[in-house]
Length: 433
Image (cartoon, rainbow, N blue to C red):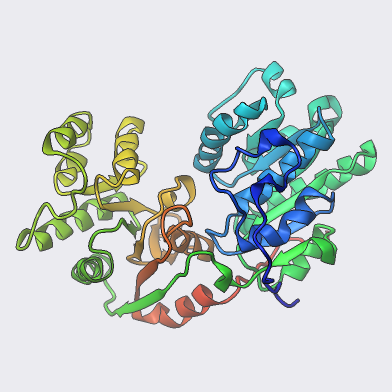
């Protein structure tokens, strides 16, 4: 199926929404070209929708517009937003609880970490959950009236159908169609994805007509993205990681000497080793060059609140660490300093690409592989993870030009160049269901 042509349309103002209380919801005055093109189908119809567009295209707004239609036209019915990770659920809850709360809407989080009382779930307008949790809840739909009142199902990152969690998403959609046929209440399905090579297959499975199919080219990204791929030979993992640090330092000096930089690595240990190497490379010039608009006293006050000794050390040079080994308090300190541009560099594991919205001008992916304990060898990161890391490079509200420098082993240059510039091929477990 051919991609959707991005039309040269006049950007719609956010005041196009007829209800005045929604005019101040967004932090911008006009929708971007992608949002403008999909606005009518999302807000003025009940068609199932598939939006395939690069990370950073504003797909979250698509979910919000579909929810607004339910709030306005079907008061009392519920919206379900499914995100692939708990961290992403928490991010959406943190954002929407404030903004939708001003609209008088109630949200509830359903994950393995949070178990709200049943009254909160019954009274909620929006349920934010993970695939596994909603799968378990919707199995008993006959005994749960709030499941039968769901009018909208939004599945974010639906391209994850192609990985291990895919079967759960497939079951959710199939069950949703089954519930809809028995309750005689249409449940609208909105899928959000990166650009897909086989969007027609996914669309036919989701019962999406041409009216609801939007699969844009990767090049429609509102903030331009450059991809630079460098090959590093060597069979041994740790020495090869070490050889990448000096080129990474040079990339920072050349392409982003003052703007935020995100460096993705495969393990907690590599966050520390990478940060220490960058500090040593900077020692001969200006060891404090990555500390930005913050006084020594203010920086020290933040450092004193940190418990991790390695993080304490790296923050003194304007470098933060972010991985699952840090406690919640330490992560918040790092996220605050990086978001407010007090420190310039953040070295993180891949989970940050999914869970926290911390855009940067330059993203460096040191290597697309990690150690898999089950198979006792190094394996490639899923393509979806690498695309998500790339998507951290710049967001419209932060930057107008971005650059992504990706460093890979020589053997992966061809495949990496292919999937970073072309549509993502999605395969499902049960195409015939």
